[in-house]
Amino acid sequence: MKRSEVYFSTVQVPLDFLMILLAATSAYFLRDLPIFEGYVSKVFNLNFVDYIWFVAYLAPFCLLIFALEGLYTMRVTRRFWPEFYRVGKATGLALIILIIVIFLNREWFSSRFVILFGWGFSVLYIAGARLIVQRVQKWLLTTREIGVHRVLLIGNNEKINRMKRLFARNKSLGYKVVDQIEVASVSLIKDIRLEKGVDEIIVGDTSLTDEELEKLFDYCQINNITYKHLPTSMQTSRVSMSVFYGEPMIEYQHTPLDGWGKVLKRIFDIVAGSILTLIASPIMLIVAILIKIEDGSGPIIYKNKRIGENGEKFFVYKFRYMQWKYCITKENPDMEEAILFEKKLIEERNVRKGGVLYKIKDDPRRMKIGAFIERFSLDELPQFFNVLRGDMSLVGPRPHQEREVEQYAEYHRRLLTIKPGVTGMAQVSGRSDLAFEDEYRLDVFYIENWNLLLDIIICLKTASALVKRRKNMK
View 1 (cartoon, rainbow, N blue to C red):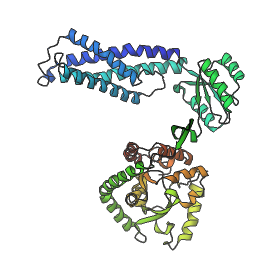
View 2 (view 1 turned 180 degrees about the vertical axis):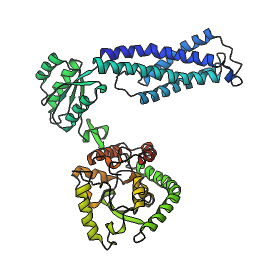
View 3 (view 1 turned 120 degrees about the vertical axis):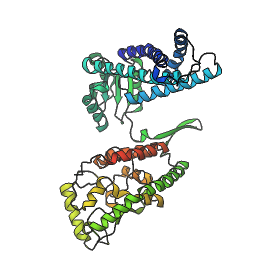
View 4 (view 1 turned 135 degrees about the horizontal axis):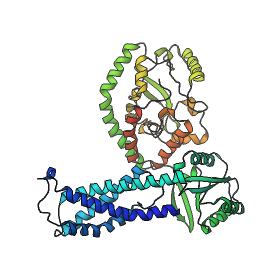
């Protein structure tokens, strides 16, 4: 930790103590305002001095809870809203303890008004004070470079170079790259440290031998340098540790969706899918009527063959948003012309150049109602029936066409190890504006870190993501 971080971390403790006293004082005097007359218990008769001494005795226990919650890790790179949540969580725990103590000893006081408002003011005051401290730290960081961590990068690949660009682009992260070398030479690192100073070393070279890594790690430990390592994709997977006949063993786990996780996810799909289908039924009826009115020559529901779990083929149900003569399906008598026209559009209007997937900007094949329903993803509502059938899940990687899957690299096939979803991590993080590799990384994160709460959060975020404008739309 930098000296400035130690200073701000030390200052934060008495500042939190003062904010607790200020919150208690605010609640004490607020109860006397005329607006609250009739809502405040008259049983409370503790004088202010005794009351403040009581709070002063209680405050250190609150600070201890803050410490246990990690609220005194004072890196300037911390984000405000997660910290606000942790402050609320810690003060909430302190509130529960206070209520229990007062219940056991009613001789102190039992004003619910003072307790609840004291808690509310504590959250606001402590979070507000921390926001001010954070702003001062960032100002010193960006204008005076006070608290900047000097970083040495080891390696020369896309991961480490991307990290270098990130540090250069975003000064508020608190990192300054002093040098980048390709070999983990301790003698070279010593020279760089003497000339420029080094606080952290980030290793992105996966070809280093165990001996080289051990020497480098020992050097960092001896010289109080933070050692960090950019792992490979396999090294970031879920792992479990065990001892097998005296030998430590690491087992790489594919996904929590194995076993009971899969059962729980299926139950969620059936329950939530049924509810969403009922809610969306009036909208689907209206869309179906409008499609039939505009272009009655083709079906309302368009079945598109996709690749699902374990490479199995299935039909995705969608509202047809294209004119029937442009739909690529065997039922269309003009399918050959439709295929040729699509290839031309991909060459001229594809907004996903160089990737596995394609997306046509301002697609001229759409109907008028088709442009609207695609804009708000209403064309995908029939996929709730895919969910109920078991072909898809509400949340998961998007199902791709066979010709797209044929262009997968071998590692991309990991996307086929679980059921595809109506929505997913990629859809709430950029929808079709994301590059395929970014979409892949998000989906792999989902596969490795699945839990039911994550599914619920993604479903809730999907609604807001639908109204955001996409690059491929007018």
